[in-house]
Length: 241
Image (cartoon, rainbow, N blue to C red):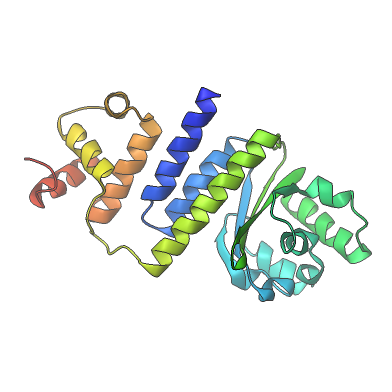
């Protein structure tokens, strides 16, 4: 349980410090991949989802052209994965939908997803607020773990990720903007010659989280390497020379 708690806290921290939408959803996908999910599709909730999904995509690592082909074939109009999200607040699986009294068209839509992506099951996570359905995070995999604790974990992370993405959309970070306190700490310790493992131990975070913060700092500073990030941070007096 302590390991899971650490994973959740680390993921929330990564999402909260992400400087772009790809970083946000990439952080969530990394966690989902650890539970056996190979694909992730994030959709912005809107009435248009009833007819097509390709224009509502916020993140998609499915095969190129899958969403467009799904729309063109008319499957989106009969997609029970999206239809269920309109009335459901909790995560649900594709297997649970198969057990419902679906129409022929709905079953064909589910079958198309399963065959095209070669997935065994999937988890659909509605992201809701007082406004209603804000978005949907769809995950699929050949051997996904779908225990209650995994569902709850991914549900929390989906809400955190969506909220962070909305914040960045409303207030985009400027390239080369100020570094976060954690990014400054990581660069300061890197400047002293510490490895990711050593920095992680000092700050009580994982080496992966250390790399995440340094990668974010590199992007904000507009540099390609760790050494360049340290040098640029020193030049800007973000860390001591």
